[in-house]
Image (cartoon, rainbow, N blue to C red; front, side, top):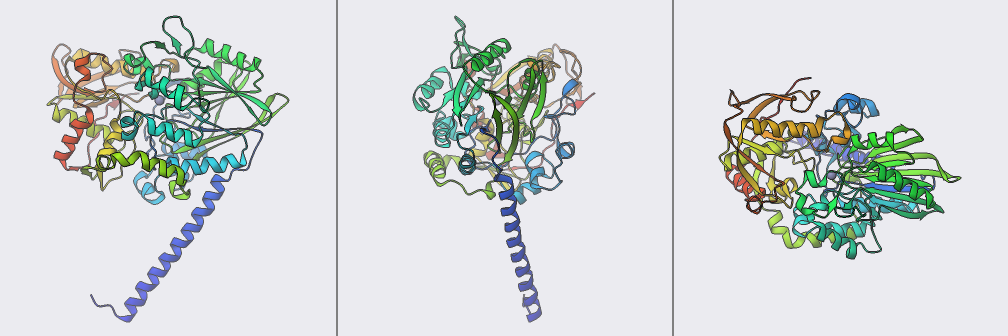
Length: 566
Ligand SMILES: [Zn+2]
């Protein structure tokens, strides 16, 4: 192609214009970052809250759910708002950075425009900046920090422990940490964390005598004010995961013990008492209405990015309830004004961590690089290419889960597949290679064995009913906080408002009704069985690697989701 002078000037003109645009974009982004991250100092007691990072040390994409069903009292309220409803409720503009951070609207184009979120090197810069304006601020880690990535699995969580120490975590509670086993947990707490990080859990006791296993709370002095942080670990650990990881400990919500612990903390002089919770938000909302004396519940587990705290009334006052999202995408900042021994006022911000607006901290970058280096070749191995957006969150299914279901059915020659409704797992934009690291971001657990079972039609229905009750029980204390088990091959109808045993109906396989007495071949993974033979099954990442290498390109998939009746 030959260009004449006019064409040339035109191209030059376009280049200049886009250059100017880029420059003004950069200035606007800087202005936005300043307004977002330089929060005026407020009060004299400060908490920085990080939760459910699921071992994502590097910036990621993470798509919030487009379906998050809540029923009864929970219907239409946070955390069960998604999409436009959520934007309207919190006053966010469509297309804005906030809309990108808190919702799944136009996710792919917004992600390409606004970039990745999180990353511990970025978080560390932000935390240091907030600490400089908030002397004495405590950094609280709500758990699900040591699990969710290849490097955390392969280093037995050492990468995350080292990152938490550099970040300066003051107090921590736990959930998936327990799947490393009692021994490894104690090893970290007694050595790495000694005199540095307080590991707290009021609801974990020894199964023999019911003695507390950990300190129930940490008492700290901040700017002349005594503050207590009580720990609440995930209550359903031995049910939701293999019980053999924690054979000597019991869990549960332990509401009465919590009330006693709050009184003990107050008796020791605490003017501020907060609960660092891994209950999940619906459980926390109920707990806040029944327990007295908590100023705030800083919650996690359900991965809800809630921009404003919910103020819950109880018989003796009010408690703020928050939930700070997941995957390093958000940092909660709670400031209290404390006078005359009690909280007078508060300020709360849930800061989205936009990676391209924050300079990564060089020390944390070096730490992350040091931990990745031995594994780099394996991590970057490409397995397939994806033409589809791959995500996990959603009440009933996500595209990455559909891919896993398809892999399980094909590789195990099964008619039906089941995959757990995990809420962790990052998002992969289309037109990208799926690396081994991306696969491990969806599958890195300590009980990865795949299974193949012959189950009766009735047995399959019972499993679906059981999980649906953990998810849709009208009493939040019976909800375990995951999403619905993902189902491949099988079609069904679900009515979440029904009672246990009556929610699931019309089960069909290839157009035929499921026969309650007939046996079907069902593939799965992440079994909670203690049986050695089950645990020796092929790990899910090996099965999926083979499947993906063979598949080569992931084409857009049809999601296997139930018909919803309400
Ligand atoms: Zn959790």
